[in-house]
Length: 320
Ligand SMILES: [Zn+2]
Image 1 (cartoon, rainbow, N blue to C red):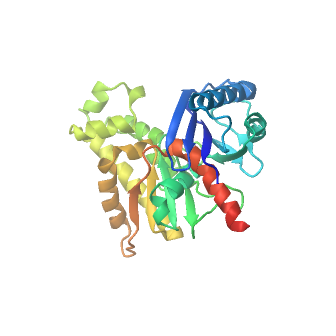
Image 2: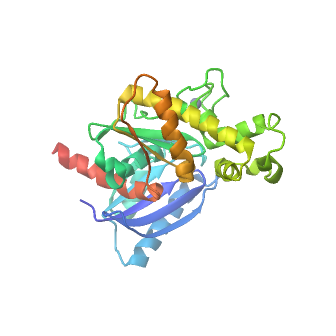
Image 3: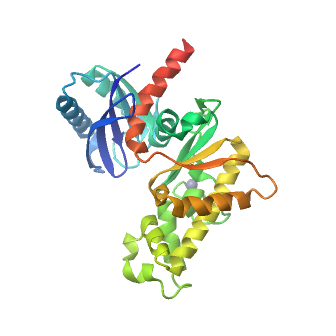
């Protein structure tokens, strides 16, 4: 099994490199903002430069394995980026081959939400449950599913796109084209949009009078709810309700032991989890089940890149 792992995370807002070990310890890391017109050549150069910098700093010649996580559609078997919403010109980019040649180590590529699910299995609460669903709540909503101790990928590697489950018929239009997807309602962008839509109903919102509309995000809404702002309170109650509807739909399909929730919105902690657990119980109606709703790893994103090679190599050993 690999001991020292180099990880790269090509995300929507930042590109980061981390060097970590098999215990989940992050030895060093480096990040830079994502640039939309970066292109594949410059992206490869940046990753290579960051990787070598981290290796040199820790006195390592080469990593034992490399994990690459990517916000977009990937072919993890072939190590190819299929489409990337954040950086243009990466269609069919064989990113794994480039890094394998450079660092002389096996490269594992995965979509970011899938990799975060794997991180929960290797380093987080997912260790304790063979059947769990991971949900990441941030600007968008994604996730992954473990069934019987194994990641469930589906027929096209796209299982776990729970953000695109409709929870509000005729709701707001989602990025995917459907209406009322969980992501469009309860994702970061959906929350900000509902603030703008509801402001006329609640005249004296401190949130709306103090924060510029373009700066309103989920974090600010939670912050102003705690200051007693009625509009923020309303938005959070609605968000929690739709999340509970989505979560009970998921539970109805998979019957998991636990739902693990990560992403930026989960960092609201008890302000989110306490009402959410109550709302899920209420939404069960007559079909109560003892499913745990658990907060995910604090640094799940960094750990995703480390967890990915560990999980994939363990799978290979299990097959042999
Ligand atoms: Zn959608």
